[in-house]
Length: 337
Image (tube, rainbow, N blue to C red):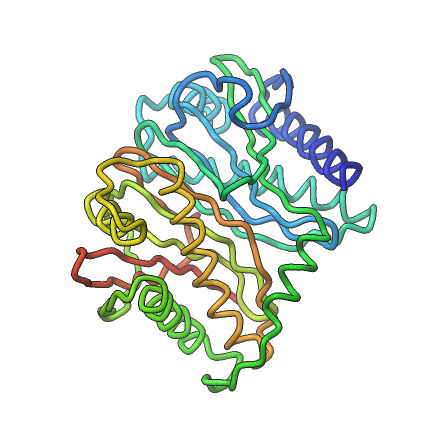
């Protein structure tokens, strides 16, 4: 596994340097790699893009993280215009850069038999953002220096042996509950039902879904914490986001731990990651006998102030609101065949 991981890291470093040089006419210097938490990361993370990585040899998530100043400098070089703020009109550049980095790395890795699959990035922006991962998850941070400051790529990964164990754990046969495997509406509805079931089974909590609706350009729902997981399947690819305001989430954490929780702790981040994973697993057990071939993935937890999630232009997101005794929360589901 170490050789495979080293190859992925080396390839992502190379493709990042090339992307910044070709697309932005900027020299990006790789200043080092380390395990997240072992060294401080300079500055705050205010915008980034995230996608799932899946191959025969590794599964994980790849996150590209920028401070405001560095992002605006890169943006200036990319589009030739000066911006003073990160907005909906210019946030797409984060996803575009990650797409290019990932595509170049994918091409190189697949020549060596890794069979890296297509993935769709999500855009994250807000104040003082922080990415966290599941319990005992090692995350490799790749640091880069450009004119204006430093930025990072975070790679969370599991070895192929863990992939095989995860797949084996989810082979239980469940009686199919959906009609045609190509039906996107039924695919979305199963994730809705899996969310309801997960909250009921894990917390004895009745959550009532509202009517799903399409996320529109003017949509503005800043949140404090979310679990994000990539969806890779034979029929639809995209992402699932479980989104909370702080007040609602802390009530959920209090219910889960049997004591009053008044602030975020490392174990509360683990709770979001586990919940997101459970929903994907529950949907997988029902949808895969119908031919969808959903694969397990690594969840990422994002928290901060006034966080927003978006997708590159042209992608459609279904928002599912939920009400419960602890408050409201929602799910954002992006699926595209």
